[in-house]
Amino acid sequence: MKLHTTILAILTLLSFTSGAFADRPIWPQQPKISAAYESLTVALKQIEKSRAGDSAKHLANASAALVSARVDLDTAKKNKGSARLEAIKLIDLAKQELDAARLDTASGYVTEAMDQVTQAAKNGR
Image (cartoon, rainbow, N blue to C red; front, side, top):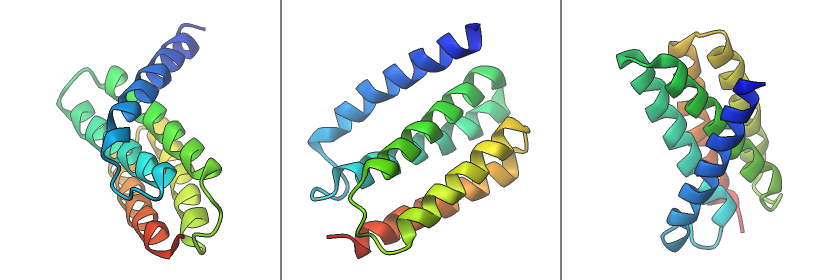
């Protein structure tokens, strides 16, 4: 139960953090895509920080950021070609790898998801 509470707290923090980026989205006409990209950036940074120490905290933050990115992509406008759906699949794979503590594979999937989100932004209207 404590982990659930921690994840909720982290998601709340991330939603406030993503609000800070609302003034300067990467793709102004696509705020959900921008927010997903920012969340993936946070996830990647947290995975890297977990290697340096306090890994449980950073891995929980990374997991919460992946959940946030997936929610943003789920609620984004659907006309992004297949890139949005591919990014969602990659996020799910990254989460599985993260849960299994396979950090190299997880960060690879996050990086690929970031590429797909960028492609979705280019495809989107």
